[in-house]
Length: 241
Image (tube, rainbow, N blue to C red; front, top):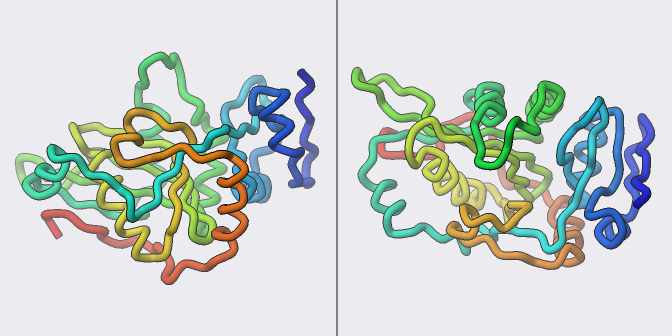
């Protein structure tokens, strides 16, 4: 298996179909993780998977798990929580805090995190440029003051939102953030949410696998379309609006 080397300041990528057939989905490796390479990668259905010894590994998956916003599924238990629990969901209120929590959040079967400081810095720069966004869920404490309870972040290009990572400090917080975020994103024009892998957690929200070729064709169309309105920083919803 020969993995291509990606050269600095050249943001082209090798054929991802070759990577899927011959390299277990590894498209290439690079020393850089700058915004130009990130945006080029996402537009082609490629994402940085992890880093090792200063090298960044760029990956893709076939089939690809996606959620079409109008097909979002909210289970009965979560629907009850959304109606009755006190919470507030916001967008872009504390991006750096959200990505730091995602990096620190323990995950079954993982000894560490792929969201190393270089990843945090790169996605924070994408956020500054308007292409990375965080959604936050706040719960009131015993005095009524709102405290961050969970959330997630991802990348937005055109009418596609590429989900990256989520965390929950309190029960249901990341689920509430996602359940409120998807209709909000749809209202701004988002037509596709990339979940990468069809995990049980995303499957409960209605994710479905599609062939990578179909996914890439869809990206070419939707990445070129503008949103109806920029995400900005605002309250998305909740029982404490």
